[in-house]
Length: 99
Image 1: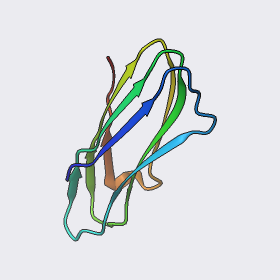
Image 2: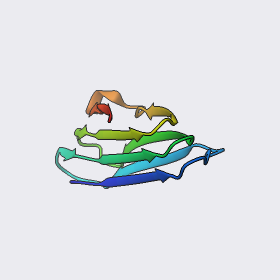
Image 3: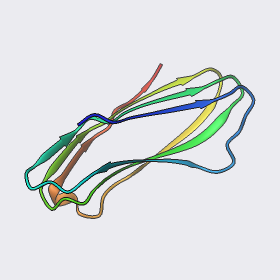
Image 4: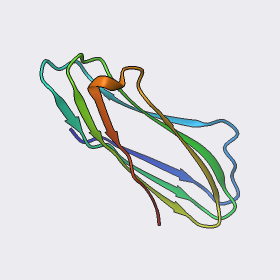
């Protein structure tokens, strides 16, 4: 499964509250894999906090291969990663690429 998120913060704008992206996988009887992609574009003088979460309702094991690309142009970014409570059935891979 492929899901995507796009965040664009214009020049000079500071987001006062965190932006939370939630990638959700529905119930599946078999193991599942997902490939969420996120692109964050921050223009000059902007600032944002981006939180990414990967959530499933499934009891079956799942694998998340997420990629986040940040394009900062003299901006500030804080990124937080939320891990699931039950890590025995989950494998998350999330490289962050600063362009």
